[in-house]
Amino acid sequence: SLFYLCFFDKMNIFVPFMKPRPVYQSLVNLRQNQKKAFAVLVDPDKVNIPDIQKLAGLCNESAVDYLFMGGSLMISQHLDECIKHFKSNSDIPVILFPGSPSQVSRYADALFYLSLISGRNPELLIGAHVVSAPMVKASGLEVISTGYLVIDGGAPTTVSYMSNSAPIPHDKNDIALCTAMAGEMQGKHVLYLDAGSGAKNPISESMIQKVSENTDLPLIVGGGIREAEKAYLNCKAGADVIVVGNAIEKDLSLIKEISSAVHQCSIQV
Ligand code: 1GP
Image (cartoon, rainbow, N blue to C red):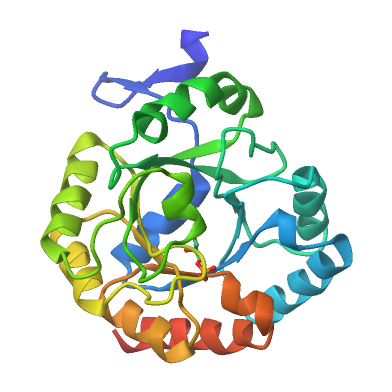
């Protein structure tokens, strides 16, 4: 009832009691404290349960900050299982990064409610959200409203094909910035710049810098990052969270390497 949702403060001002949003708050804290975070992206279609247990151990040892879970397709049916196994081996928060409205699991800690603001496909701006809204609400998940910008990564990626919408050209920093600003003013809570999984060219530092300097939202950057050096440079340019999926699938030792490069950047700012 309303009684439980609101209270009066000392000056008798009516204050709604907000549901706690720990994952979102942790993202805001990064930006406020100039700390950097590393997220490992797992596509449930590409892992089995023993992989997940091994991955959880490596993520724990390497001080990974978040596990993002999701993929453009969902061929396998074991999303819940993957999350449960990860969580029984790790305290790292799991955030859903859904490629379709069916990718909702109440076992995760939070969900990026992605709106593809770089595209002009109404389905991915609002349509899929309408379809998934009752399911998302019923899940009780912490929902993080996300302005999602796909940037051309030099080759067609799954996200560029599936979204049926042109990505922002790699060198058009102003378009990226104006799109990010629009997302911020529309009330999105975080921004995600993505060159797409397995992108040939990751997002340029100059684009990251332009967006980061001119917006206040936590900034997540991913797509085609294969080296610790690039992760470090992205952080220096203003990314708050670095996401890596593809390269880690090929070489698990990168988890430790990239995580320490990202955290190194926190220390030096
Ligand atoms: C894709 O940003 C993520 O949506 C990660 O990309 O798989 O290329 O690391 P990679």
